[in-house]
Amino acid sequence: MKVLLANPRGFCAGVDRAIEIVERAITKTDGPVYVRHEIVHNRHVVDRLQKKGAIFVEEPTDAPRNSRLIYSAHGVSPATREAARSRNLDVTDATCPLVTKVHKEVERMKKDGYEIIMIGHEGHVEVEGTMGHAPDSMHLVETADDVARLEIKNHSKLGCVTQTTLSVDDTQEVMVALKERFPHIKLPRQDDICYATQNRQNAVKELAKTCELVLIVGAPTSSNSNRLVEVAVKLGAKSHLITSAEEIDPQWIEGIECVGVSAGASTPEVLVEGVIQTLTEIAGPDTERTSLPKVDEGMHFKLPRELRD
Image (tube, rainbow, N blue to C red; front, side, top):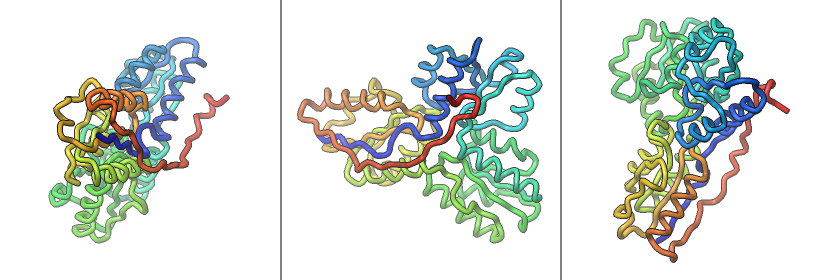
């Protein structure tokens, strides 16, 4: 059997930055460090940071007054920031800069009097944070079918943003539907879907061309990991989302000649290596391991000034 690894896979620059922010804050802070929501959607990462001393909470009101609080990579609403200020929390912002870019675009459109449509998944923490920047003038859609049900006050002043971790192809379908119904809509100059999400989806498409089975290592709460599974299935491959090697069912690979393996943007490489080891143990020592050509994404985000050496 052949195991084909996706490139790129796993951690993106925004996740690397968020994790390093928590680790540095722990070493530089006298007293506990609180993190609002899971810093990234991966239980392995969260558990490791908890062992180092991070305390995860859902809201600023869960952190003691005057303590250190870090916002997760998914971003927060202005209401959350105000709640932190009211408790005099020492805040460090680990929001992915690409999410921050979307927030600033929402603020610009709101200032100019636009209604704003967000393409995203209801209940996702990134969506809640973004929509909180213009709660009275934003509409959420998930599919092209949702577009027909929108009630817009002024079709001539209508803008659009997207969640950063969506399926590129599905998002394009929604944008086409929006443009057909609202010809004057201001669509993003470039999709708000981040470079890492798009690159990982492109890599999974390559896996699905030659692999009968594609395994995605990621958390059930990870939007970009779930989208990778959908991409593989749409191209005709069987696909499963697994959190670790322990979830692999040996029956999945019976009669399979090639298994593709990728990982969501918040998945550490150690979990991918565990999957490869388990596949090799199941299929036997003749298992061939190979990878798609290496991709240098060339992206690095600076740490907040207070945490730089």
